[in-house]
Length: 127
Image (cartoon, rainbow, N blue to C red):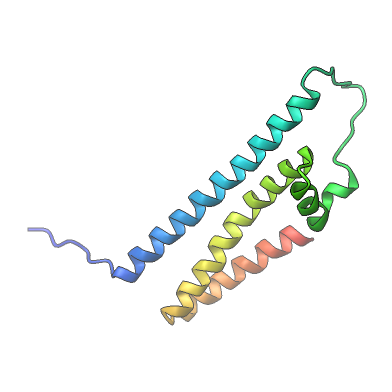
């Protein structure tokens, strides 16, 4: 007869919350990118792109505040960029929630590991 490993209820709850957090983040991100893409194609779908000239994102779409303002004003590129910011923020939110769960459980070793991961993530995003 095999014994089943009992997982504490708090661990199950944390796993469910993290799973939902990741799922909602990806669905929300994909929705914004899709809606922005539809608006973009609605306006520019019939135009021929010039592949001889590379034009990157405008400087205005490299600032969090400007992207948020553009998304609120229904700017096509702003909506797409906002969806990408949500996609980047999703694993960041997961790490922050995990650290809070480890703090709640008083598992300070994992709080330290999670803090290191959070520091690396924040450094890579903002550097």
